[in-house]
Length: 357
Image 1: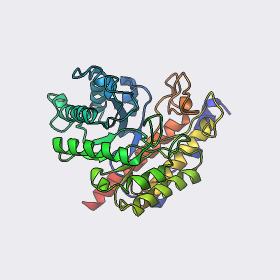
Image 2: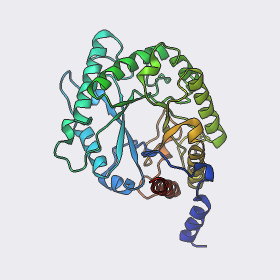
Image 3: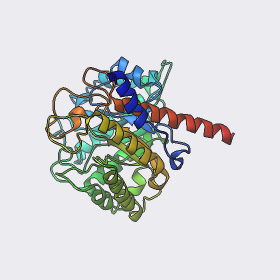
């Protein structure tokens, strides 16, 4: 069998239509990716028609490197290029500038919190529904969902001590500020991940929801259920959902704002499955999420990541090879599986909408 024939055979085996349980309408923006690097124009051209949501960071320390001095050149470029391709953006806003403290130290003190709220107001005024950035643009895609911080159950992103109540304080200030600037905005919790040096996702969720009033401060929860097997993925989502129900937030939607496995890596890891194994996991995971999205109230699932990286990550044993594309930009089998699943889901949704008219 030739190499080309082998690839076709692998894809034929991997790409199947989801079960009838997942055949109903899929929420808009369901299929997303989380690039490690800023996507190029050719990347966005390839994403167009398949990837519906681009999750990207807005790093406060990069956008306001000096107090009151803003630099949005890189963020403008990424948001504008995505909008031109019809791809919506979910930003997660993160990182304290060094003129206020350490990057991973959240702005919780009086002066720092005031500056953080000011930065959020600037962002909404720039990229929100009446944002100055969209004036004169042919394809505006105003940002209406804002994710606050990243993985606050992990000491790499939240120092010096993991405290759900402290995150609730940041969330409250953030949601009040954003909603005042855009009453129609929707606030997304930071994604929480199953990390070794942190608090378990469902434990963090349970403790967060015990904080008085916190349920009013967000519209969607978020989780990063990294798993090497589908049963483990299932277990994590069941546990988080149970914590949400117990905490009175059972009706709120849940975004899977990161998940994935790798085709290769420099370090030994259960998450390194080879190219065919990565594609198989992606298919099985998305089919599971689609089939269970009503029970788990899944509003979207974003694959981490778009393209492989040359260097390894000391904090992640598999991220280097988790891309849908290889380092040279050629697509892996996982990309073709992702593409077919996304297009099939969108087609079924369109057909369902037509029948309802």
